[in-house]
Length: 109
Image 1 (tube, rainbow, N blue to C red):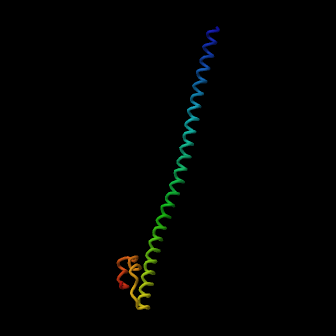
Image 2: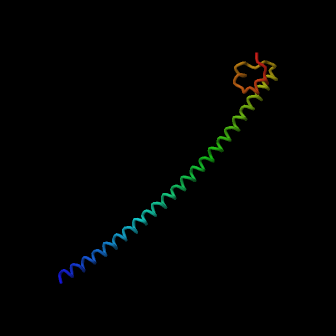
Image 3: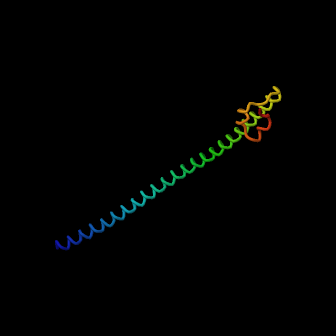
């Protein structure tokens, strides 16, 4: 009778252990799924941030190029007006700082 009761208790314990393992596996899956979802959400946020930063960088580069072109035009306009108004030749040092296309506007010494 003791052996029979012991077998019965061992069977109950085995079933409870199986249930516990199953429960632990489910918890692990849920934790893994929650971690994966959190990781994916962080990835989406980082991707949006990087896309916005890349777009801003492109806009700034375009703005910089426009400003450089505008400054070159103002320099050329100023020098050509100076050459015309003063009737003098431009300083060689000033001419060397200008792009080749604009150097022809004011004759050098």
